[in-house]
Length: 385
Image 1 (cartoon, rainbow, N blue to C red):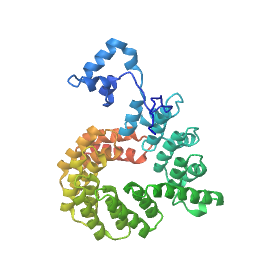
Image 2 (spheres, rainbow, N blue to C red):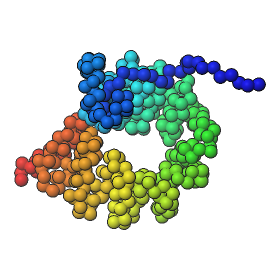
Image 3 (tube, rainbow, N blue to C red):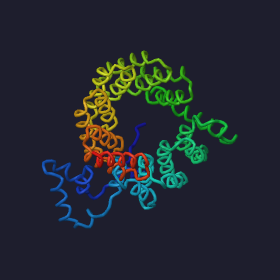
């Protein structure tokens, strides 16, 4: 019997049509529908026409994308903007959840209390976003906040809470919490085993086993992921890290080189191999691998930072500073890059530049005593010069 298909309006609200905001393309680089069709015209052209048609009121209104972009870039004031967005009940849950997830990487003095409230939100998306941010919170502070979510009504929230508390000391948990954790971890394993033919699920299982100290089980899961998808770079990186943690660096090097052979364009594998070679005091080889990682992923601030530190360690200061300055332009809120720029310029005797970078670091981290100490040291050396 033939099946008749009827056109219906789906109850899920998973699509929307919005008035284009080409002004946001100019501010934060987001795409807009105008420029998609008129690709030959610059974003400013589209922004000007939007003002002609709809007036300037629309483009002058704040947009949640600006707070999210500030959080991802680590810009000054990001934590306040993210907290305000999270606490705005008129915004969609997925937007508030994204804001919550970014608060952990942009901490402020009241971030923990903000996240504590988000973990109690009625919408599970927001609770899940807050759990993502809790990964950046110290384990001892994390435990009392996350433990109640081990019995959350939503499976996704329960298993994420379990992953965060997987290695929590048993003596810090009540009997009820230990039971809830065991149950939620079992649920996590079942969700991954349901898709056991996927390398991502094997990677997740391996990561859990590695955290729990089950080395053989973790190795088996990572090996299974590689067998399922020989080009799946994360499995090689995690397996090599497992070998590092068990003093099997030589095996880790073999694994990473196998991974690079299968996935030569995977920057994380070159980066991991570079770190391994640095630990092995094989710096020239390490620099080649770290350089390749930066070449393949020029927007990854961490790769550039580590490469610059390695360059400075072998006396290639000018090249290190050049890489850091380029990275700073792309990631003005990255604290590691600012600290390196301040320290390296200080070493070169460029105290004015060093102080400028240190002042930016203080502005980003006003509650970090290390940032103040760095600035004071540079200023002291500069005045005594």
